[in-house]
Image (tube, rainbow over all chains, first blue to last red):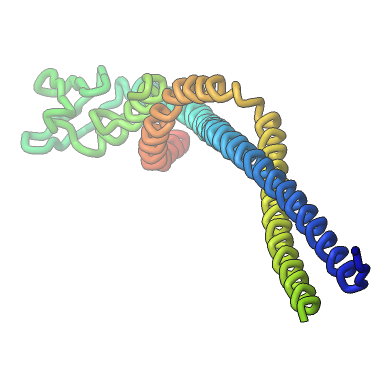
Length: 191
Length: 110
């Protein structure tokens, strides 16, 4: 005959509760494990995507930075070119003005010297000319009519005294020639 | 005697399971944080990429850079040459100018 015992009931209830709790725990554990597995997959995918985007961004940024650097460099070069243009214009202006005025002064000095008589023209390394009358002046020489005839004295051969060379701006060291040479250099293309 | 033993066993089991449970939850929450961080980073990168003209812009930008480089070459080569030339002319002019001015002044006095 069945005999009811209170302790058996408690044991049964406890056992049932334990089984129920265990089942619930296992089910919860399974859910968490599934969630974790899914999250791991998603996290891996997201990490992969993030890495890919970072790589794309890095490439794009590097390319953009290089372009920006080129643009900055262009700005600097253009600025430098503009400064050179200004410097060139200023030089052209100054040299053109001085060359023009210098050429005019030299031409005037030379033309007004025609007919001038020098009583005694001392020459380097040769006898002096007496009553030497200037009748022609070129960039490199001066021609004289003198008591003994005609003399065409050349600067390059050091036949003329320094005072005459400087006075009429003659020879390779001529100032107006030097200025004209600078003008030619300015107009010549840069090498 | 069996009842307390059973009770203790149940309690022990519950404790262990709770700990395992908490470990898993911690792992999930850490992974979730990383996941969200990566998602945010991806979104930020996409925004930055869009701001820079999109990922397809790379070849175009590289081409632009190359074109610009070609365009700048004459200036890169020409500027220093011009600078040297102008400096040399300027120096020569600075040397000639006082002499020329003196020559002019001397001639004008006559």
